[in-house]
Length: 293
Ligand SMILES: Cc1cc2nc3c(=O)[nH]c(=O)nc-3n(C[C@H](O)[C@H](O)[C@H](O)COP(=O)(O)OP(=O)(O)OC[C@H]3O[C@@H](n4cnc5c(N)ncnc54)[C@H](O)[C@@H]3O)c2cc1C
Image (cartoon, rainbow, N blue to C red; front, side):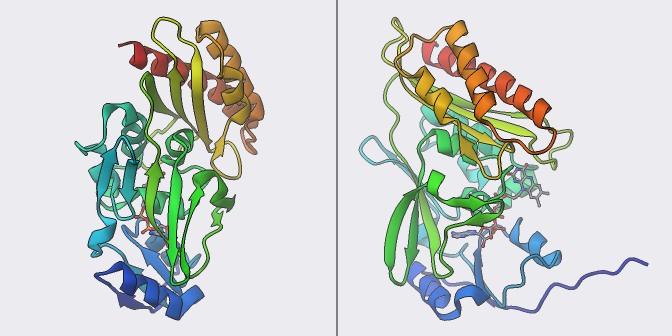
């Protein structure tokens, strides 16, 4: 006999200002959860992995909806921006294409039309698709509570599989991404999904900056990985290896090998490491080609 689990009873709030949402969180603390698309949280509630007594829906808050870009302030993505909106946003310059590719890797059209980039981070799944590109881009998160605000690098956000450093009274209001210098490009490659609903087995987000198209000396490299460690991670050793080197096939191959060695997969480890190598090599090659085009 199949026993259907009932979702727990909860009180629902739909504040129209950030101040209201913050005050609700301050009032209900651990008993409350904020959400946007609900594509992760409602599934967790159905499975009884989350049983919040108060749900705070952020979708009506105008302050959290926008995407802005300026060379001085870089790219800012509000907490309720969906994958669908990001992937088609005319505001985002071409040099951030890896972000659009990462959002397009999330589920099907329906999931992308509801699910948000911040929700993808908030769940803190090791296999989430957008963190590798965001990590490679040096993304930071703005966290706000009744006590004030702080900005932290995305790398410092994760505390383990499905765990993060958010205080119960805090919420993420925006993702901040520094401006990319000239001669930069990147990509997000993932492997492999049989259906759109499958989890990514290995995801690699890469951002490369070179001094000039003629010299091709790497001045900055970002490599983010998912599904190969307890949390999304940066391949720091591979990034360091690339810096100062003239980028060619041989250097790319060595960097991919280093990234593979520093990944920490637990299951299907040998295969995942091989896929980190293959996808990092392909991603760096594609990034260089994009700069040269
Ligand atoms: C059918 C299906 C397919 C999917 N496929 C993929 C896939 O291919 N790749 C992938 O990466 N994911 C996938 N997902 C997971 C999910 O869709 C994404 O993680 C999505 O980005 C979550 O966004 P959301 O707005 O729906 O999050 P929500 O469910 O609203 O929230 C998720 C978590 O983040 C927290 N949160 C939300 N907003 C904030 C905030 N502003 N501040 C602090 N905490 C916050 C919530 O409390 C909750 O813990 C899939 C889900 C489904 C149902």
